[in-house]
Image 1: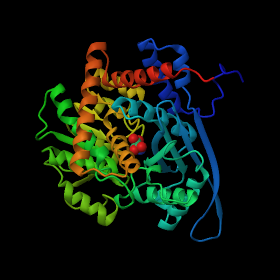
Image 2: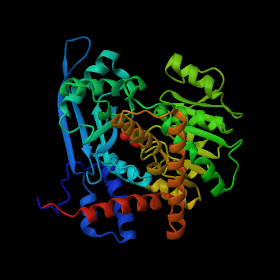
Image 3: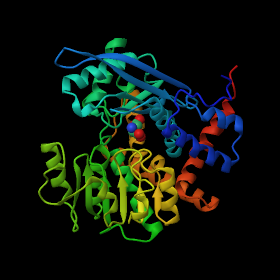
Length: 425
Ligand code: GLU
């Protein structure tokens, strides 16, 4: 296969094709040097592993598939989450690693993008099984991660505890504690305060600017949030603290709706006690997909990819969409929404609060000097709001939408770095 034969790419998948398609569009618009563009279309390193996994019953041995993809190693270590999901694949992880590169560059965090995953349904695992999967997967990728090379974090289906096991496995391997190998850890292990809330909070830091741009008041604004996990839940908390009315939230069991606004604290308490929204007493229960159709000013997809589609985009009532999940809007839906005048704050900008506080966590671990919650939240707000202003001004000066403007900002920074480093040897 010659390098120009692009029909047999190992990471080929609809999601990877879409990420590259988006990149190509923006690269063309920017007049990006084709030599640089071609280096950025592909991940620099992709690791695929298979490993044995025994359930608690100890009868059968299953083979699990795991991935870690590092898209760009030009500007520092690579960074990005690890997801546990039943359908995760190399193409998905490669696409998400590329998005992480742009995300880091947009907020000016000195990392390249990475992403990893294990193809397993975390909801079916006992705690002991989850621990075994995490530790064995960590061993399988141990030579490609490290505090100066590649730093994992939580993503869909993983959490602080999973990061703690990852940190422990790595530390056992090298013989001393290495908190900086992973972010999103519990604070007792060198995790940062305010990391758990960072993505959801970061999304909502951008709401005043988006509302101002579109022309409505944040106070009393109706907000619908798809997902009530680590991102959606804290976005809901932040929105209600800002005086918004959170009218709908959802999880895999369905959606709940209340026209005069949900009591977010009581929903969160319910989920802590019952795991899912199912059965929550003080709201109407509606089918999960109907969350996208409720009357609202702000829609926050905060669960998974590909949920805003050509089918539901024409019926979405929100004036603003703030993308908490990675890649929640399909390209054709994006076009429909743009034509309808919906203002979209894209994932690579909107959900960058997570990796920004991950960066703070890594800096604190490396320096062994920890910051206060006020310092972290203040710096997060400053970085997020400045990135929004920069992207909006590119959107205005270039006459493009926010997604294109954000990608211009990210790609430009990365391309500049690549050009000044040159080619080895
Ligand atoms: N998984 C999160 C993301 O997609 C966080 C990554 C990180 O903190 O490194 O942005």
